[in-house]
Image (cartoon, rainbow, N blue to C red):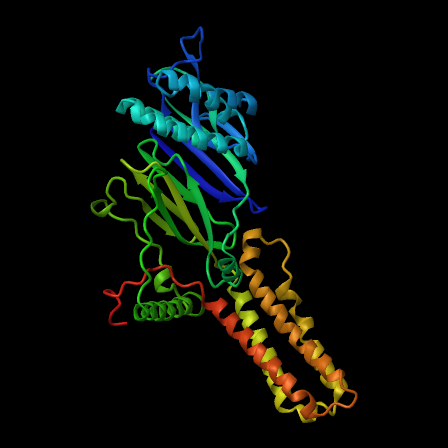
Length: 460
Protein backbone atom coordinates (compact mmCIF):
# COMPACT_ATOMS: atom_id res chain seq x y z
CA UNK A 1 0.00 0.00 0.00
CA UNK A 2 1.73 3.18 -1.19
CA UNK A 3 -0.72 5.93 -0.33
CA UNK A 4 -4.36 6.85 0.13
CA UNK A 5 -5.93 10.01 -1.29
CA UNK A 6 -9.28 11.20 0.05
CA UNK A 7 -11.37 13.92 -1.60
CA UNK A 8 -14.19 15.13 0.62
CA UNK A 9 -17.02 17.23 -0.81
CA UNK A 10 -20.76 17.77 -0.44
CA UNK A 11 -23.75 17.11 -2.67
CA UNK A 12 -26.58 19.56 -3.34
CA UNK A 13 -28.75 17.62 -0.86
CA UNK A 14 -26.23 18.10 1.95
CA UNK A 15 -24.75 14.59 1.86
CA UNK A 16 -21.04 14.01 2.27
CA UNK A 17 -19.41 12.91 -1.00
CA UNK A 18 -16.23 10.86 -0.48
CA UNK A 19 -13.87 9.86 -3.28
CA UNK A 20 -10.92 7.63 -2.36
CA UNK A 21 -7.93 6.59 -4.43
CA UNK A 22 -5.84 3.68 -3.13
CA UNK A 23 -2.39 3.28 -4.71
CA UNK A 24 -0.98 -0.23 -4.20
CA UNK A 25 1.30 -2.93 -5.55
CA UNK A 26 0.50 -6.66 -5.21
CA UNK A 27 3.67 -8.50 -4.16
CA UNK A 28 4.39 -12.21 -4.17
CA UNK A 29 3.25 -12.65 -0.55
CA UNK A 30 -0.36 -12.30 -1.67
CA UNK A 31 -2.21 -15.42 -2.80
CA UNK A 32 -4.10 -15.07 -6.13
CA UNK A 33 -7.69 -16.20 -6.36
CA UNK A 34 -7.46 -17.48 -9.95
CA UNK A 35 -4.81 -17.77 -12.69
CA UNK A 36 -5.80 -16.71 -16.23
CA UNK A 37 -4.49 -17.96 -19.58
CA UNK A 38 -2.75 -14.66 -20.44
CA UNK A 39 -0.44 -14.96 -17.42
CA UNK A 40 -2.35 -12.55 -15.21
CA UNK A 41 -4.28 -13.35 -12.07
CA UNK A 42 -7.51 -12.47 -10.33
CA UNK A 43 -6.93 -11.00 -6.87
CA UNK A 44 -9.34 -9.98 -4.13
CA UNK A 45 -7.70 -7.11 -2.26
CA UNK A 46 -9.05 -5.57 0.99
CA UNK A 47 -8.93 -1.83 0.26
CA UNK A 48 -11.25 -0.19 2.80
CA UNK A 49 -13.17 -0.70 6.01
CA UNK A 50 -16.89 0.12 5.70
CA UNK A 51 -19.57 0.02 8.39
CA UNK A 52 -22.11 -2.81 8.32
CA UNK A 53 -25.18 -0.64 8.91
CA UNK A 54 -26.64 1.66 7.73
CA UNK A 55 -25.32 1.04 4.21
CA UNK A 56 -23.51 3.76 2.31
CA UNK A 57 -25.26 5.46 -0.60
CA UNK A 58 -24.10 5.29 -4.23
CA UNK A 59 -21.15 3.02 -3.49
CA UNK A 60 -18.97 2.78 -6.61
CA UNK A 61 -15.75 0.81 -7.14
CA UNK A 62 -13.51 1.31 -10.20
CA UNK A 63 -9.99 0.62 -11.43
CA UNK A 64 -7.46 3.21 -12.59
CA UNK A 65 -8.92 3.18 -16.12
CA UNK A 66 -12.41 3.97 -14.82
CA UNK A 67 -13.80 0.48 -15.43
CA UNK A 68 -16.37 -0.66 -12.89
CA UNK A 69 -15.24 -3.45 -10.54
CA UNK A 70 -17.71 -6.09 -9.34
CA UNK A 71 -18.74 -6.07 -5.70
CA UNK A 72 -19.39 -9.07 -3.48
CA UNK A 73 -22.81 -9.38 -1.92
CA UNK A 74 -23.04 -8.39 1.75
CA UNK A 75 -23.43 -12.00 2.91
CA UNK A 76 -20.53 -13.24 0.77
CA UNK A 77 -18.37 -10.32 1.87
CA UNK A 78 -18.94 -11.17 5.53
CA UNK A 79 -18.16 -14.84 4.90
CA UNK A 80 -14.80 -13.83 3.41
CA UNK A 81 -14.18 -11.55 6.41
CA UNK A 82 -14.94 -14.47 8.73
CA UNK A 83 -12.51 -16.78 6.91
CA UNK A 84 -9.75 -14.18 7.15
CA UNK A 85 -10.45 -13.54 10.83
CA UNK A 86 -10.37 -17.25 11.64
CA UNK A 87 -6.99 -17.60 9.87
CA UNK A 88 -5.26 -14.79 11.81
CA UNK A 89 -4.59 -16.36 15.24
CA UNK A 90 -1.78 -18.90 15.80
CA UNK A 91 -2.71 -22.60 15.73
CA UNK A 92 -3.55 -24.36 18.96
CA UNK A 93 -6.31 -25.28 21.35
CA UNK A 94 -7.28 -21.65 21.91
CA UNK A 95 -7.84 -21.17 18.18
CA UNK A 96 -10.10 -24.22 18.00
CA UNK A 97 -12.10 -22.93 20.96
CA UNK A 98 -12.41 -19.34 19.69
CA UNK A 99 -12.97 -20.23 16.01
CA UNK A 100 -16.80 -20.27 16.07
CA UNK A 101 -16.88 -16.98 17.99
CA UNK A 102 -14.55 -15.33 15.48
CA UNK A 103 -16.79 -16.49 12.65
CA UNK A 104 -19.93 -15.12 14.30
CA UNK A 105 -18.31 -11.74 15.00
CA UNK A 106 -17.74 -11.18 11.27
CA UNK A 107 -21.11 -12.41 9.98
CA UNK A 108 -23.55 -11.02 12.59
CA UNK A 109 -24.75 -7.46 13.06
CA UNK A 110 -23.05 -4.89 15.27
CA UNK A 111 -25.29 -5.37 18.28
CA UNK A 112 -24.76 -9.13 18.43
CA UNK A 113 -21.06 -9.01 17.55
CA UNK A 114 -20.12 -6.40 20.18
CA UNK A 115 -21.04 -8.67 23.08
CA UNK A 116 -19.13 -11.56 21.52
CA UNK A 117 -16.01 -9.37 21.15
CA UNK A 118 -16.12 -8.48 24.84
CA UNK A 119 -16.46 -12.14 25.85
CA UNK A 120 -13.68 -13.15 23.45
CA UNK A 121 -11.41 -10.41 24.84
CA UNK A 122 -11.84 -11.76 28.38
CA UNK A 123 -10.99 -15.31 27.25
CA UNK A 124 -7.91 -14.18 25.30
CA UNK A 125 -6.56 -11.98 28.10
CA UNK A 126 -6.90 -14.81 30.61
CA UNK A 127 -5.27 -17.37 28.31
CA UNK A 128 -2.54 -15.00 27.04
CA UNK A 129 -0.65 -15.18 30.33
CA UNK A 130 0.48 -18.73 29.56
CA UNK A 131 1.32 -18.10 25.86
CA UNK A 132 4.71 -17.22 24.36
CA UNK A 133 5.19 -13.51 23.56
CA UNK A 134 4.85 -14.06 19.79
CA UNK A 135 1.53 -15.91 20.11
CA UNK A 136 0.29 -13.36 22.65
CA UNK A 137 0.99 -10.56 20.17
CA UNK A 138 -0.83 -12.38 17.35
CA UNK A 139 -3.88 -12.95 19.53
CA UNK A 140 -4.04 -9.29 20.50
CA UNK A 141 -3.79 -8.29 16.86
CA UNK A 142 -6.59 -10.76 16.08
CA UNK A 143 -8.71 -9.20 18.82
CA UNK A 144 -8.07 -5.74 17.34
CA UNK A 145 -9.25 -6.91 13.89
CA UNK A 146 -12.24 -8.67 15.46
CA UNK A 147 -13.29 -5.48 17.24
CA UNK A 148 -13.15 -3.64 13.90
CA UNK A 149 -15.17 -6.32 12.09
CA UNK A 150 -17.83 -6.27 14.79
CA UNK A 151 -19.29 -3.07 13.33
CA UNK A 152 -17.55 -2.94 9.93
CA UNK A 153 -16.77 -5.09 6.91
CA UNK A 154 -13.77 -5.15 4.62
CA UNK A 155 -14.37 -3.95 1.06
CA UNK A 156 -12.79 -6.55 -1.26
CA UNK A 157 -11.79 -5.28 -4.70
CA UNK A 158 -11.63 -7.85 -7.51
CA UNK A 159 -8.54 -6.91 -9.53
CA UNK A 160 -6.99 -8.47 -12.60
CA UNK A 161 -3.23 -8.00 -12.80
CA UNK A 162 0.15 -9.46 -12.09
CA UNK A 163 2.66 -9.50 -9.28
CA UNK A 164 4.76 -6.37 -8.87
CA UNK A 165 2.55 -4.13 -11.00
CA UNK A 166 1.39 -0.88 -9.45
CA UNK A 167 -2.35 -0.23 -9.68
CA UNK A 168 -4.96 2.18 -8.36
CA UNK A 169 -8.41 1.41 -6.96
CA UNK A 170 -11.00 4.20 -6.82
CA UNK A 171 -13.90 4.16 -4.36
CA UNK A 172 -16.75 6.67 -4.19
CA UNK A 173 -19.79 6.84 -1.94
CA UNK A 174 -22.18 9.25 -0.26
CA UNK A 175 -23.05 9.39 3.40
CA UNK A 176 -25.10 11.44 5.79
CA UNK A 177 -23.28 14.51 7.11
CA UNK A 178 -22.94 14.10 10.85
CA UNK A 179 -24.72 16.76 12.90
CA UNK A 180 -23.02 18.56 15.76
CA UNK A 181 -23.72 16.62 18.97
CA UNK A 182 -23.24 19.49 21.42
CA UNK A 183 -26.48 21.49 21.55
CA UNK A 184 -24.73 24.69 22.65
CA UNK A 185 -22.38 24.60 19.70
CA UNK A 186 -25.26 23.92 17.31
CA UNK A 187 -26.96 27.07 18.58
CA UNK A 188 -23.75 29.09 18.16
CA UNK A 189 -23.35 27.71 14.64
CA UNK A 190 -26.91 28.60 13.64
CA UNK A 191 -26.22 32.18 14.74
CA UNK A 192 -22.92 32.22 12.81
CA UNK A 193 -21.10 32.87 16.08
CA UNK A 194 -19.03 29.72 15.57
CA UNK A 195 -18.11 27.70 12.46
CA UNK A 196 -19.87 24.44 11.66
CA UNK A 197 -17.53 21.64 12.68
CA UNK A 198 -17.40 18.43 10.66
CA UNK A 199 -15.54 15.45 12.14
CA UNK A 200 -14.38 12.75 9.69
CA UNK A 201 -12.53 9.61 10.91
CA UNK A 202 -9.90 7.85 8.79
CA UNK A 203 -9.29 4.37 10.27
CA UNK A 204 -6.74 3.42 7.58
CA UNK A 205 -4.49 6.47 8.05
CA UNK A 206 -1.51 4.37 9.11
CA UNK A 207 -1.34 2.34 5.89
CA UNK A 208 1.01 3.18 3.02
CA UNK A 209 3.74 5.76 2.76
CA UNK A 210 1.44 8.79 2.93
CA UNK A 211 -2.12 9.99 3.47
CA UNK A 212 -3.61 12.88 1.47
CA UNK A 213 -6.97 14.52 2.26
CA UNK A 214 -8.55 17.28 0.18
CA UNK A 215 -11.69 19.06 1.41
CA UNK A 216 -13.95 21.17 -0.82
CA UNK A 217 -16.64 23.17 1.04
CA UNK A 218 -20.29 23.46 -0.11
CA UNK A 219 -21.37 26.48 -2.19
CA UNK A 220 -21.35 29.81 -0.29
CA UNK A 221 -19.42 28.29 2.62
CA UNK A 222 -15.69 28.60 3.14
CA UNK A 223 -13.00 26.68 4.97
CA UNK A 224 -12.46 28.39 8.30
CA UNK A 225 -9.90 25.93 9.64
CA UNK A 226 -8.80 22.34 8.95
CA UNK A 227 -6.80 20.12 11.27
CA UNK A 228 -5.64 16.49 11.27
CA UNK A 229 -5.12 14.56 14.49
CA UNK A 230 -3.44 11.14 14.59
CA UNK A 231 -4.78 8.61 17.09
CA UNK A 232 -3.97 5.06 18.12
CA UNK A 233 -6.95 2.87 19.13
CA UNK A 234 -4.71 0.86 21.48
CA UNK A 235 -3.50 3.92 23.41
CA UNK A 236 -5.55 5.60 26.16
CA UNK A 237 -6.73 9.14 25.37
CA UNK A 238 -4.45 11.94 26.40
CA UNK A 239 -5.07 13.64 29.72
CA UNK A 240 -6.82 16.96 29.11
CA UNK A 241 -4.87 20.07 29.98
CA UNK A 242 -5.91 22.22 32.91
CA UNK A 243 -8.09 25.27 32.39
CA UNK A 244 -6.20 28.51 31.68
CA UNK A 245 -6.10 31.18 34.33
CA UNK A 246 -8.83 33.81 34.27
CA UNK A 247 -6.43 36.65 33.43
CA UNK A 248 -4.98 34.72 30.48
CA UNK A 249 -8.46 33.85 29.27
CA UNK A 250 -9.48 37.53 29.37
CA UNK A 251 -6.40 38.46 27.31
CA UNK A 252 -7.24 35.72 24.80
CA UNK A 253 -10.85 36.90 24.43
CA UNK A 254 -9.83 40.56 24.07
CA UNK A 255 -7.13 39.73 21.49
CA UNK A 256 -9.54 37.52 19.54
CA UNK A 257 -12.36 40.08 19.53
CA UNK A 258 -10.10 42.99 18.54
CA UNK A 259 -8.43 41.12 15.69
CA UNK A 260 -11.74 39.64 14.51
CA UNK A 261 -13.28 43.12 14.20
CA UNK A 262 -10.17 44.30 12.32
CA UNK A 263 -10.33 41.25 10.02
CA UNK A 264 -14.06 41.67 9.32
CA UNK A 265 -13.64 45.36 8.64
CA UNK A 266 -10.83 44.71 6.19
CA UNK A 267 -12.65 41.85 4.48
CA UNK A 268 -16.15 43.21 4.13
CA UNK A 269 -16.15 46.99 4.48
CA UNK A 270 -12.82 48.21 3.24
CA UNK A 271 -11.64 48.17 -0.36
CA UNK A 272 -8.86 45.72 -1.13
CA UNK A 273 -7.95 42.43 0.55
CA UNK A 274 -7.90 42.14 4.31
CA UNK A 275 -4.63 41.17 6.01
CA UNK A 276 -5.90 37.74 7.04
CA UNK A 277 -7.67 36.98 3.73
CA UNK A 278 -4.46 36.87 1.69
CA UNK A 279 -3.84 33.43 0.22
CA UNK A 280 -1.49 31.50 2.55
CA UNK A 281 1.98 30.59 1.42
CA UNK A 282 3.04 26.97 1.18
CA UNK A 283 5.72 25.91 3.63
CA UNK A 284 9.18 25.78 2.09
CA UNK A 285 11.04 22.49 1.98
CA UNK A 286 13.39 23.32 4.85
CA UNK A 287 10.54 23.79 7.37
CA UNK A 288 8.23 21.00 6.26
CA UNK A 289 6.86 18.78 9.09
CA UNK A 290 8.96 15.84 10.18
CA UNK A 291 8.00 12.24 9.48
CA UNK A 292 4.75 11.28 11.18
CA UNK A 293 3.68 14.89 11.86
CA UNK A 294 0.42 16.04 10.19
CA UNK A 295 0.45 19.05 7.89
CA UNK A 296 -2.50 21.29 7.01
CA UNK A 297 -2.90 24.06 4.45
CA UNK A 298 -6.16 25.79 3.63
CA UNK A 299 -7.64 28.58 1.57
CA UNK A 300 -11.23 29.77 1.65
CA UNK A 301 -12.31 27.26 -1.00
CA UNK A 302 -10.07 24.26 -0.28
CA UNK A 303 -8.22 22.48 2.52
CA UNK A 304 -5.35 20.04 2.20
CA UNK A 305 -4.24 17.65 4.97
CA UNK A 306 -1.19 15.44 4.67
CA UNK A 307 0.97 13.08 6.72
CA UNK A 308 3.73 10.67 5.72
CA UNK A 309 6.28 8.34 7.29
CA UNK A 310 5.87 6.30 10.46
CA UNK A 311 2.64 7.36 12.13
CA UNK A 312 -0.27 6.19 14.25
CA UNK A 313 -2.87 3.83 12.89
CA UNK A 314 -5.89 6.13 12.60
CA UNK A 315 -6.62 9.82 12.11
CA UNK A 316 -9.45 12.27 12.65
CA UNK A 317 -9.95 15.33 10.44
CA UNK A 318 -11.64 18.37 11.98
CA UNK A 319 -13.01 20.79 9.38
CA UNK A 320 -14.64 24.09 10.35
CA UNK A 321 -17.00 25.66 7.79
CA UNK A 322 -18.16 29.27 7.95
CA UNK A 323 -20.44 31.54 5.92
CA UNK A 324 -18.63 33.83 3.52
CA UNK A 325 -21.06 34.95 0.81
CA UNK A 326 -23.98 36.13 2.95
CA UNK A 327 -22.51 39.29 4.45
CA UNK A 328 -25.34 41.29 2.85
CA UNK A 329 -27.95 39.14 4.59
CA UNK A 330 -26.25 39.72 7.94
CA UNK A 331 -25.83 43.45 7.43
CA UNK A 332 -29.46 43.77 6.24
CA UNK A 333 -30.61 41.84 9.29
CA UNK A 334 -28.70 44.22 11.56
CA UNK A 335 -30.14 47.27 9.75
CA UNK A 336 -33.69 45.92 9.89
CA UNK A 337 -33.48 44.96 13.55
CA UNK A 338 -31.93 48.34 14.32
CA UNK A 339 -34.80 50.10 12.54
CA UNK A 340 -37.32 48.10 14.57
CA UNK A 341 -35.44 49.01 17.76
CA UNK A 342 -35.58 52.69 16.77
CA UNK A 343 -39.31 52.41 16.02
CA UNK A 344 -40.11 50.83 19.39
CA UNK A 345 -37.92 53.34 21.22
CA UNK A 346 -39.65 56.17 19.37
CA UNK A 347 -43.05 54.72 20.29
CA UNK A 348 -42.04 54.39 23.95
CA UNK A 349 -40.92 58.01 24.18
CA UNK A 350 -44.01 59.33 22.35
CA UNK A 351 -46.50 56.86 23.79
CA UNK A 352 -48.89 59.60 24.91
CA UNK A 353 -49.24 60.96 21.39
CA UNK A 354 -49.36 57.61 19.58
CA UNK A 355 -52.21 56.31 21.74
CA UNK A 356 -54.36 59.16 20.44
CA UNK A 357 -54.02 57.81 16.88
CA UNK A 358 -54.64 54.08 17.34
CA UNK A 359 -55.37 53.24 13.69
CA UNK A 360 -52.33 55.06 12.33
CA UNK A 361 -50.04 53.60 15.01
CA UNK A 362 -51.34 50.09 14.40
CA UNK A 363 -50.77 50.44 10.64
CA UNK A 364 -47.21 51.64 11.29
CA UNK A 365 -46.47 48.67 13.55
CA UNK A 366 -47.89 46.10 11.12
CA UNK A 367 -46.09 47.53 8.10
CA UNK A 368 -42.62 46.49 9.29
CA UNK A 369 -43.03 42.64 9.39
CA UNK A 370 -44.32 42.63 5.80
CA UNK A 371 -40.92 43.89 4.63
CA UNK A 372 -38.96 40.94 6.09
CA UNK A 373 -40.00 38.25 3.63
CA UNK A 374 -37.12 38.81 1.24
CA UNK A 375 -34.62 38.31 4.08
CA UNK A 376 -36.20 35.29 5.77
CA UNK A 377 -37.30 33.23 2.75
CA UNK A 378 -34.55 32.05 0.42
CA UNK A 379 -35.34 28.91 -1.65
CA UNK A 380 -32.66 26.72 -3.13
CA UNK A 381 -30.06 27.09 -0.36
CA UNK A 382 -27.59 24.33 0.43
CA UNK A 383 -28.69 22.45 3.60
CA UNK A 384 -25.41 23.18 5.42
CA UNK A 385 -25.70 26.87 4.59
CA UNK A 386 -29.31 26.88 5.79
CA UNK A 387 -28.18 25.44 9.14
CA UNK A 388 -25.58 28.19 9.43
CA UNK A 389 -28.18 30.94 8.92
CA UNK A 390 -31.15 29.42 10.75
CA UNK A 391 -30.48 31.24 14.03
CA UNK A 392 -30.07 34.59 12.26
CA UNK A 393 -33.42 34.16 10.55
CA UNK A 394 -35.09 33.16 13.84
CA UNK A 395 -33.75 36.33 15.47
CA UNK A 396 -34.95 38.36 12.50
CA UNK A 397 -38.41 36.81 12.73
CA UNK A 398 -38.45 37.55 16.46
CA UNK A 399 -37.50 41.18 15.76
CA UNK A 400 -40.26 41.40 13.15
CA UNK A 401 -42.79 39.99 15.61
CA UNK A 402 -42.12 42.73 18.19
CA UNK A 403 -44.08 45.48 16.31
CA UNK A 404 -46.97 43.03 15.94
CA UNK A 405 -46.91 42.49 19.71
CA UNK A 406 -46.76 46.26 20.21
CA UNK A 407 -49.85 46.68 18.01
CA UNK A 408 -51.67 43.89 19.90
CA UNK A 409 -50.88 45.62 23.21
CA UNK A 410 -52.24 48.89 21.87
CA UNK A 411 -55.48 47.25 20.69
CA UNK A 412 -55.97 45.31 23.94
CA UNK A 413 -57.03 48.49 25.73
CA UNK A 414 -60.49 49.90 25.03
CA UNK A 415 -59.27 53.42 25.74
CA UNK A 416 -55.43 53.30 25.68
CA UNK A 417 -53.31 56.03 27.23
CA UNK A 418 -49.57 56.65 27.34
CA UNK A 419 -49.00 55.19 30.85
CA UNK A 420 -50.98 52.05 29.90
CA UNK A 421 -48.64 50.99 27.10
CA UNK A 422 -45.33 52.79 27.80
CA UNK A 423 -43.76 50.09 29.99
CA UNK A 424 -44.94 47.33 27.66
CA UNK A 425 -43.34 49.09 24.72
CA UNK A 426 -40.22 49.80 26.76
CA UNK A 427 -39.79 46.03 27.36
CA UNK A 428 -40.19 45.39 23.62
CA UNK A 429 -37.60 48.08 22.85
CA UNK A 430 -35.10 46.46 25.23
CA UNK A 431 -35.79 43.07 23.62
CA UNK A 432 -35.14 44.52 20.16
CA UNK A 433 -31.89 46.02 21.47
CA UNK A 434 -30.73 42.57 22.62
CA UNK A 435 -31.68 41.02 19.27
CA UNK A 436 -29.80 43.74 17.39
CA UNK A 437 -26.72 43.11 19.54
CA UNK A 438 -26.88 39.39 18.80
CA UNK A 439 -27.14 40.09 15.06
CA UNK A 440 -24.14 42.44 15.27
CA UNK A 441 -22.13 39.54 16.74
CA UNK A 442 -23.32 37.34 13.86
CA UNK A 443 -21.95 39.97 11.49
CA UNK A 444 -18.54 39.96 13.20
CA UNK A 445 -18.08 36.32 14.13
CA UNK A 446 -16.79 33.59 13.91
CA UNK A 447 -13.40 34.71 15.19
CA UNK A 448 -10.31 34.58 13.06
CA UNK A 449 -8.51 31.26 13.00
CA UNK A 450 -5.06 32.41 14.10
CA UNK A 451 -4.38 31.07 17.63
CA UNK A 452 -3.58 33.32 20.56
CA UNK A 453 0.19 33.69 21.09
CA UNK A 454 0.98 36.10 23.94
CA UNK A 455 4.68 36.31 23.06
CA UNK A 456 3.82 37.47 19.51
CA UNK A 457 1.03 39.89 20.46
CA UNK A 458 2.24 41.26 23.78
CA UNK A 459 2.27 44.83 22.40
CA UNK A 460 -1.24 44.60 20.96
